[in-house]
Image 1: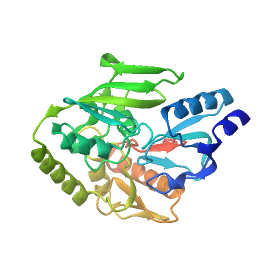
Image 2 (image 1 turned 180 degrees about the vertical axis):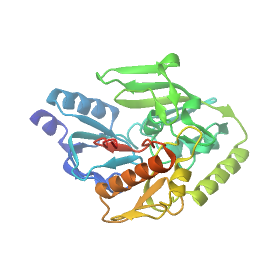
Image 3 (image 1 turned 135 degrees about the vertical axis):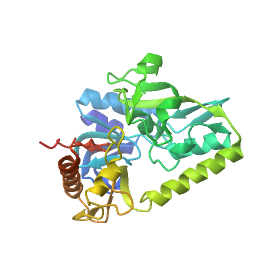
Image 4 (image 1 turned 45 degrees about the vertical axis):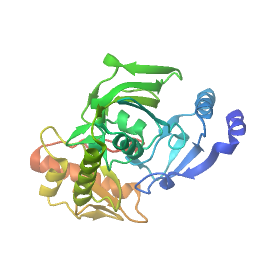
Length: 300
């Protein structure tokens, strides 16, 4: 343990509050919080953590994450810009580092007249997180344009996933690797001005229906097949209900927004209240889209 602390002391913070790094502004301390500056440092930290027997948690933008108030033991490694943030356009392909912000990649695609990502405007987080969770909306998801993914495997080796090794479904991928190093996307040539107009229209629509100005982690629940989680929650009369400093959004019922002083317990209470109400009224079991450290226990 001493070796990794000494070797990476410049990029290590002890007991770092994770509330500083999540969009909900919630989360207790990380026992060891590493912020690698280069890919070489990243790989070195991961090797060191494995040698020391530390559990490894990869943190991207923190936009789709609920961290418990008690915090996380082991190592939290932050992977986001400027680390792994390169974005390169090659004809109709874009190669983006796993730490690049999705918003930046969308902008680069539009600027170069490449269609296929403009409907992802307004979705926060990194490319790595977007691919792992197959981010998207009613107009499609990112998995539709993915051609290959360079990953760091659970055993610490680098590999490239292509073809049958890649499978995407609604807000899920089959990537079980430790982290995404880079992604290659195949897009379609289009007029940049038309793309800009479509992107702006998509952004305006999201801004009018989602509480983008509030602290939130995006959609809390996955949409059940053929249904809208937000509509089910709204029909249960739960819009605006609160627990502590957390509240079900008045604008979109599938969002939970927080104020200063909110706790993970506040969020968990609202999640349980929503799941019970929807189950009792519609017989539908809502599944979480948001990630949780540690994982939330399923309702009995």
